[in-house]
Image (tube, rainbow, N blue to C red; front, side, top):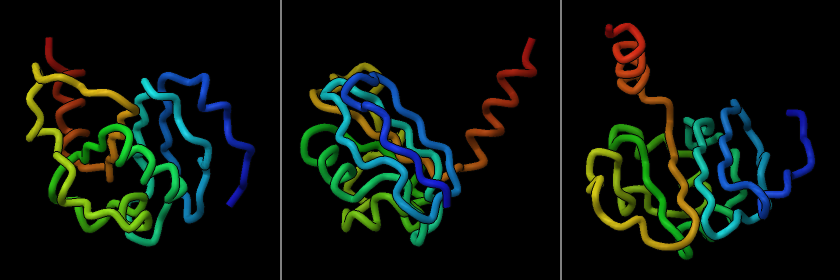
Length: 125
């Protein structure tokens, strides 16, 4: 694994990780209004986000998972010792409800249904 220094997350409103990492690639804590999309770490053994970062978002903000089908695959959450089933999946969110305060982490494990939806949108007239 190639390691790079953490970006200055305190300045980033949007952070996306899409790696096949088997080790932590982000350790710094995000800013309070940040949106993080963690797309890698799609097995229990994989991890992109430091457990401290993930637990920070769980206590100070909100975590949303892509689908209940991936509860057993969300490496970042599992390695942080978090109960994945306590976080809402996308389909369980009220689109018009309040966001709340603190950073938001969207944990995706690469569910193929989203790929299909994106392809259909791209191909529709």
